[in-house]
Structures are given as C-alpha cells and as structure tokens.
Length: 109
Image (cartoon, rainbow, N blue to C red; front, side, top):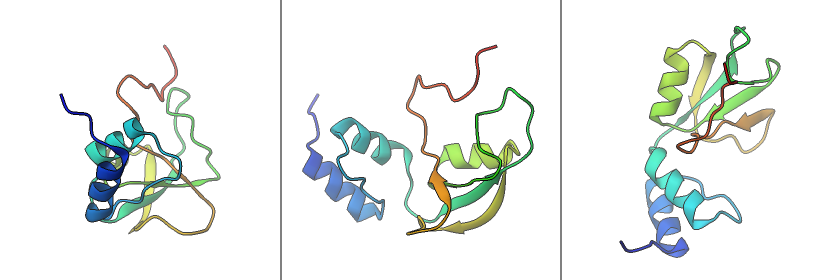
C-alpha cells in the first residue's frame, strides 16, 4: 500500500475546500480527508441530555464538519442545529471533530 505524503493530502483537502490544521500529522490529514465532506458544516449547541451522553459543555457552541457524524449527532437530538456555515473564523465555539475509529466519546456503562 502506498502511503500518501503530507503535501499530497494537503492538496486534496485544499481542492475539496476542507481546512488544513497547523502541525497536523499524515494520519490526521488522512482521517480528515476520509471523514469530512466539502460544504458547510453545522454550528450546534448541546441539548439537555441524560448522563450517558457525550461530555459537551451546555454553555458552548460547537462546529461539526459536514460529515455522517454531524448528521447522526443532529438526528439523535443530542444537539440543536443553530445554522449551517463554513468553519467560523472567530467566536465562542469549539470544533467537534469526527472521532477516529476506536475512539469513544461516551462514558463506559
């Protein structure tokens, strides 16, 4: 299997209109290329949830990239959709990125 270079992944991300984080590793860039879709993301805020929901600050807004993960979060009603937008340049929000396979954002039962 041929391993993609940081430069080629960055070019592919740029061509899709996906922002490239500073100091990202090849694995992070590949993950972003595999999971993010071009287009506007979702600016959301958490709904009031039971204890076993992901740990989200109820007073914080989150930006989720256009992805299956974002659509699942909204469909699950864990968050309220505020608007669709490109990643905000400034403001009170945190990036809620697509988790890597094997990552768990939920508490253990």
